Length: 359
Image (cartoon, rainbow, N blue to C red):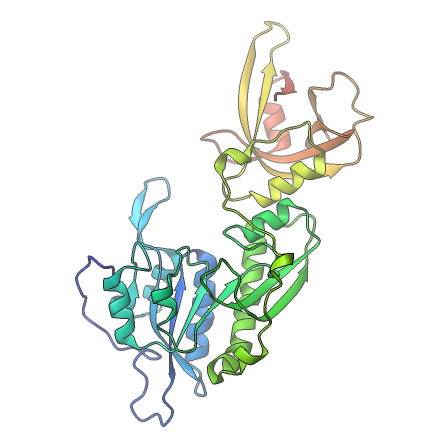
């Protein structure tokens, strides 16, 4: 893999990279920028489309985040996009991993490739003006929201947190202002009440890949510029990066608010709640930190009875009384360092202790 400090590795020529010498059509040089697994699915779609006999483009380079420590062993590994490119036989010296996209050494090598178009999908780095001026056809971004709604780093998570019933994916030209460029096309979908952020991300980037392939001919011939729609900034909303401290659940809020948060923060950073397990005989109380994995909303807590802070087990779920006379049913939980278990297994592990919610 390539970075501004790494040595140049031997270049391999593969199908779809160097192209056939006898081809009468000079394919457009496209550079892809992305980092997480959802981006890898977009890159895969581009690789497949570029190998078609009538393809108008080829992937000239891949740009991604630098290798980082992942998994429990914190082993330094390439990003999912870099790994996928390598698995597909893409030349390692055409995979770039600059710390910042504005590094002059990186920009110099990018210019030498003479890319005509750049595609971004969850790349994770700010693109400076020097970068945006390089490809004559511009830079196009797959953004998982209906722009100008939810501009920013966490559009899917913030949309789910708000409990939206409809969202989608946008294909837009990149400008210096955050996610504010002209929109080429959008795809709209309805949002199920139980879908979680990782699932919705996969779905939207899958739709975005299809949208990109559909619109690439117009982007390449330049007609996408004239048909693109200027965003109405007055209708814009922001989707700021998630802070791990936001993950705590406050049961004085209504159950629907908490359920939406559980869905939105699924995967990372997750949602956490403090509960107390009380031994009725000894009076000893043990405070537990629960990660809430799966939940659903129940109408009201009129049937629970007892103290308002008591958590009971009913019909396969932990029943938490919440604000507005509502109830959150928790179906799966996880204790620190333990595996995810269903509510029944967790309840049985309490061995008769009384469970109370804590603020």
